[in-house]
Image (cartoon, rainbow over all chains, first blue to last red):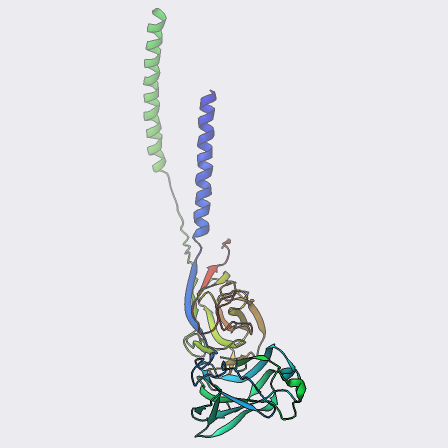
Length: 204
Length: 208
């Protein structure tokens, strides 16, 4: 008797399970439809590089030594703008990683001016390891003379269109004649950073 | 012995009478066929509804074929598309699934965001592509809140009855998008090809 009852129980459980799976099937059988579309988003790039260090395209790593008041030092550097996006501006920042009166005295300390030549600068080496430059094309001022340390100073007259190309720059640093004896044996190390900023955000 | 013989005879007799009853039953059955009868007929047809969802034809009602190029950080991309509920049944839900893209463009922090809005009437194109913008002369409702591009989910439509739903997809690349690969991947110089799948499901079953 006990065994029979057990069989009956198993049977009814089987029936319940069948009913449940049928209910499951009917839920799946809803009418549905799908449709698909594709869309692609491609982002642009902002890419600004300096010419190869140690060549006429980048003399910024050539140190300037034994400077006297009234001296100037010229160094060429080429800016390569290979951005696929148009730029809003290119700016320059300078920080003194080793500081002295040369960079802290904004009146009598080092002043800097940046110019651009429409073609590569003609470089003439000087005896002491420095250089002097001439422009056989057209010269434009990119940054007017100002104290050497600066934060994000916008540079003008640079091509900012997409793939803006190459800008031949000359960085001229000078110690004003007014620099007094306090400047003797001073040493500063300057890091120059050029930053390119994309055009303003818009609708695409 | 005696008892068992007697009982054998009884069972044979019982079987016999059962056989006779069977014949009587069959005869009675024949008699039933001979009665007057009548019948009547009613017809009832059952037609099922359809679930059919489509996107608008390429053009004013579907600008998905206009891919966005040279997108910069902070840019916005607007494309309108009509979602056509062409079936005869109301729906219980329309869901959107977005697949594709790149690691950088799908990044939750600096990657693309997507928002979907619905206009009660067709969207008006204000500016042409690139730089397409729209306005809604009716009522605007949010169908998908601004979020990760691949989030997808159920569209909060104004109505799930058959008809055209005028949707506007708006993608944004956050101003924090990275030029170089950082913690949140690289968003610049990337092409993300995305597939948008809309699925409509019939209304809940009911009595008809």
